[in-house]
Length: 347
Image (tube, rainbow, N blue to C red; front, side):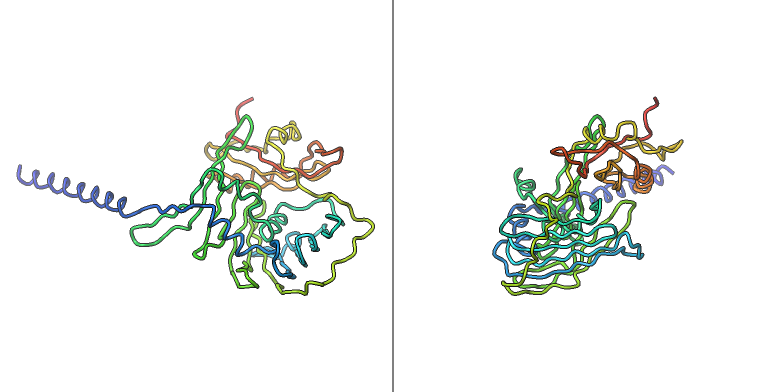
């Protein structure tokens, strides 16, 4: 009887040792590869972004629609004819919005019909022409690209990661990522202001251009933009004359404001319509877009473990009337972060 119990104990010990050894071996076999970030990032921008200084002229049309539906509010077109960095024309058409931007030797000129430029539409525009506006934001701290190599030989997507705090009195750690595919081109650009996924790369001139871009709009709506036209044009192609009603400043430009200033604009209209009970406790970040009349037009969630709950809470903020934001004496669209803890503190 004692021998039998001894054998059982020895068996348990052997199992524990084998499991521990297997775990240790897996840890030894899984490794992290790091590479300098700056060169890879600069190369990706040079390889894929249209409209770079000294590049051959082109004409491009991006058609945007909802991935699994045909909602007209998410149908849009971005079209550009580019001859040089100071000679191009871009038109944006969407429901309730038509804007033409002409760049020539006298500067930038805007002709706009509409009262709001959606966050999701701007994400596509930035993704096409300026996916990383300030490269030094990603390289000044000697950031590296990290890639996990697993015991079975599979590799994670190589990415540059950043962490930062958003919010005012209530703060939350948020994340930004630049991820690359096997060819060193962008797989995803994700930050607090916008996020875009890239795929379907094809060669054009000296570039490898993504022909499919994807964006998640507020409420979890999935949008896809596909390049319908991408062609070279002559250097002497015509750029439209500037209309008499054009202005030198974009009337629908977004101004990014701090959480503190956004809270001031919101006043007592800042909190979501909390339910009687919340599913657990935690934090969530909203990225809010407010039009020139002070109306909350979009609320996108940024960082939460309960995405469905966060989306539901975000919807309760859309449509609220806040104070009007102004810059240089004129009303402007604003965007920025708000951070909430849930359940809310008892008053």
